[in-house]
Amino acid sequence: MPYPVVHVLFFLFCVCAVAVYATKKALYRKELSFRNSRTLLLLMFVGGLCTLLPDIPAVYNLLVNGTIEHCWIGPIPTHSFLFSSTAILFGGVVGYAAYREFNKAVYMAIFAESAFLTHLLLDDMAKGGCSYLYPLYNKPIRVFLIMDTGFAEVGLFKYLIFSFVSVFCVFIVILMALFALSQFGFEFSYRAEK
Ligand SMILES: [Zn+2]
Image (cartoon, rainbow, N blue to C red; front, side, top):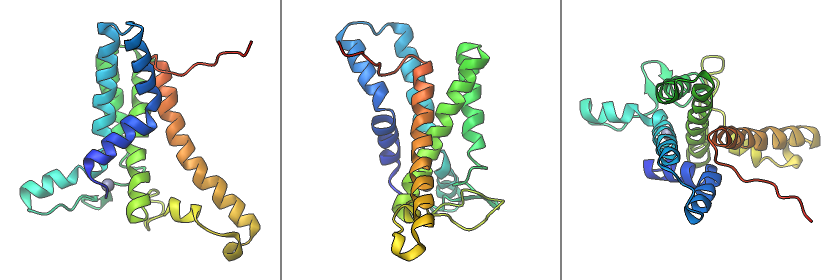
């Protein structure tokens, strides 16, 4: 597992680079109002916390058992889509509490989920594999190992499928964050060439 600070920084500065860029631009143009900075702080809070959520058992185990076991809550692996429902719930509740709008709650839930999934992808890259599909499939799946498969080993057709699926997983997570951020006003924009 990469250190917690790496998870947070990777999500905030790499996956959410568009928000950093938009904030820098707004500060430069003196357009960042108090209301906007509240949204920014809320996104940082939800994103930062949800990107650490899969390792949350470490806090309990450190205090109670003196270990840093961080992958299980009872029989449930925390590095799974099933446990990511906690991020969706947390993002939704925080979004609704802050804006009292169902749409904003959904966008915040999507943002929280992308933060959670970013953690899984980093862990996958570092330690190799997460039980993404628990309880449908209990063994760890390694997205980044699949990405590294050569066509000499599996044949051209499987190689193309593996390549597409693995890159698509990363693409979807980044796209979720970009979509949610755009709904909160943080986006790049297209300027037509003249
Ligand atoms: Zn982890």
